[in-house]
Length: 208
Image (cartoon, rainbow, N blue to C red; front, side, top):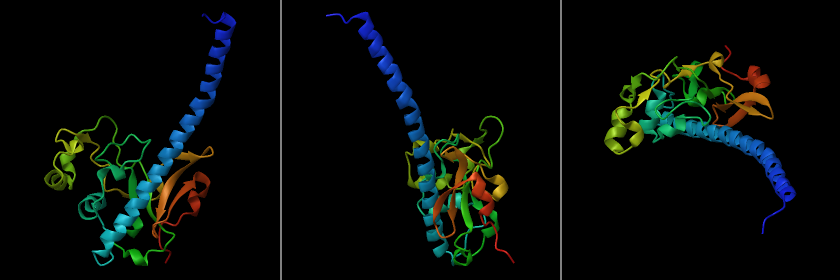
């Protein structure tokens, strides 16, 4: 039995209206999920840096912090990649506050920035450097054979790893209710999404 043309028109109209409602909602949900996963990644890095510092007299690293967390705190390279960014495994979307490098974590004020979102290290043009430039490459190759992401022919942005920076290197990758902002993790391990208008309130250094 064939449906009348007018009924088909109503069905098509209903489908169009349904898609008009669902597509923006799904897109918004996807962006929300990316922001939340990014925050969870950073919270995990804060826990890992606490474990690392406990093994080194409470001191924060002064270099190679990504490699050190992979090798000594069992952090997955995937934890350094923020969903929604263009980064790939073997690169990092986050930076450590350069003003606290080498300090004892317990001496850093709880509300001081520890990690933040950044695009620091992205180079113009295609990826040129081999994954083997990463200090942890041989470590993963030895202990995690078969990890496809660490094939020798993988190319990365060479400087997009082990990054230290300051407020000038922040990137506003996400938004909350239309307000752009970024994920921050503080020295006490607390993650928070900070909108652009609140970035000036962040503490980056210990005032003398």
